[in-house]
Image (tube, rainbow, N blue to C red; front, side):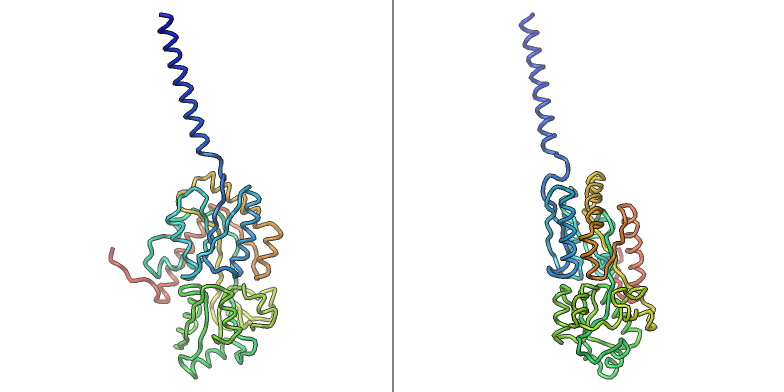
Length: 330
């Protein structure tokens, strides 16, 4: 009786030990986040303003998180190539991306497998960019009106570069030229640096891009004819806005960080806290100031609401411009 009782006790104790061991193994397999490097995808070419500033942000956030935040580039398609990555990534917090404004437009202009609201988990909004109309320093163009006059006198000869089809610069140009019954040659580039070099070298007659062009304007390589913001830039106070010149257009592109759909709230909170501290670090603030940008912070809930609003607004914009994708009838 005692022998049987002892065996039963040993069996029970063994089972308890095994159960405890299994529990320990499960605990060890699910360490606190993060336990390894995080990848931040930047949907622009390396060397541009966004790429450089995101690398600074990633380094600062990594210091907060205690792991390395690796920056990877996936340029092209107007800044929308991070969306397929998020769409296919595990929602564990180890894959995140910069979420630029064009993703909200492309969802309405092309048939894509992803949705920028449904398939993402917003982490925080960081900043926004100001766009400008640029020409070579020696160009004869001194205003947008002079460009329109050239396009009217010599149809099909005016070449203008942007950072891609369907981007904000491209949409603004379409609006400006279509309203006047004018044509231009659209030349898309993958990155800001490549486009700036093309304008400065005279390979294209003009360009529209975000304020990554700042150093080139300040150094005298390029001339800034107008900005697309609501107010004049403090950096270039003598340069008028499109609205001041009589064009009812204000174009700014807020951007932030997001992960795949379904990220756990605790992981979102950890990433948010680290990147929020990083974006308010003087090093990052000074970096984006080089490109005439300021912080425009929104937390996860507010950024999610802003993303829904941007998606809805872009539906209106692309329908107004006749850029909406054809209905499939489904």
